[in-house]
Length: 109
Image (cartoon, rainbow, N blue to C red):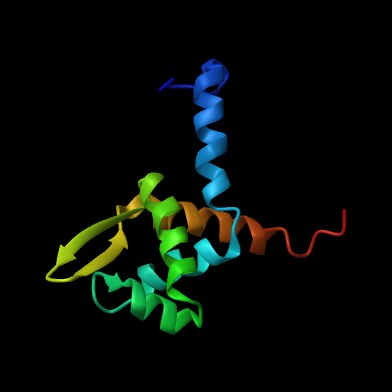
């Protein structure tokens, strides 16, 4: 990865666009926030689906996207797969985004 934004390659821009695309879906954001706020370190698909009032296949599809983007990790526990946030960068990204939104809420431009 380039060290400065001025020297970002086309390939890196494409990767970055795909990365931010993952955050563009409100359902994926709800899943991330749930995983960040859970008292345990991880949740199974059924618990996520029940908590968010969604069907399990839809949750699984979103979790697959989040996993492919390295935002969540999955561990097998007996017959269940448990999902958790991959690292602190995920929380930092959401925090920066929310700070930006709250900071600009009063703008009338």
